Length: 347
Image 1 (cartoon, helix red, strand yellow):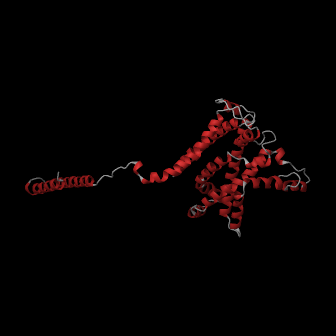
Image 2 (spheres, one colour):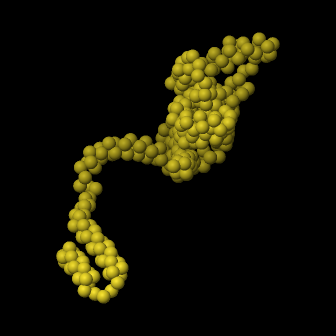
Image 3 (cartoon, one colour):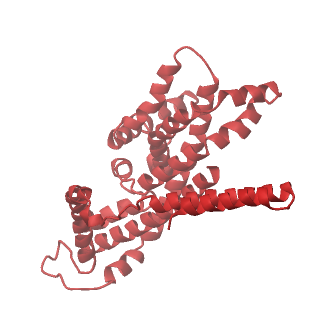
């Protein structure tokens, strides 16, 4: 079918009608306009029909699949083999003190771990540790970043580097510094300050073990929050702040209505990343308190270590590891959904 020929015939017919008919000229012109629109639609349809449709290729025929498959297979092997061994050990009675007893026990190890006397204190301490460190790092990170951005003084770059530097110290080294140089009841800095005021020095790791761990971990993760939030502060539109100042807004109003909404996404990222890592805090507890006194500073990670390498019960430790993995995945899924919704709403 020749669309152009048909369209030309229609136009020619309308023109002849215009000169031969007795209709009003406005009526004939209206018909001519309608026929012209129809002709344009026909031409557009023909143009779409002439465009060749792309041929869908199979994913297996894509050469990129063959290039990526070795790394994907290696990654899956690196993840599945340890996970499979952990599942296998969690289903058998595997104690290093009794190497010959490896019978299948099903979910017995999970039951023993969940009913162990240290599980509830460990889970509670884990929640307190994660929540407290997140609160301290986010609140102080926002305030310190806002102060550094608002003030201009000599040596501000040096102060920024000093604020970020604790994040690059290894957890074991940082825990030893706090244990021997700050929290020590005899030679620590806090003990010296207490003596200056005539007070009795406090053994922080013995009397306030969980609070001491929270302070140490917060000191290590606060620089990470400052780094992310301080970088985000530099992208804040300064023209909006100047306009707010011209309208009479004070520093508190600018911080509440401009700075905090701008930091919503960086705060969400800080919360997600820190939560995932704080669920597995171990070196600080092992170096300072060893989970004590009793279970006062024991979290789930240290409880699993205690089952595996202190009591030599690999089966129960494997069950505890799987439970910790499930808890971490639940927390990650919830945080990713919350952050994804936050990013969608802010977009």
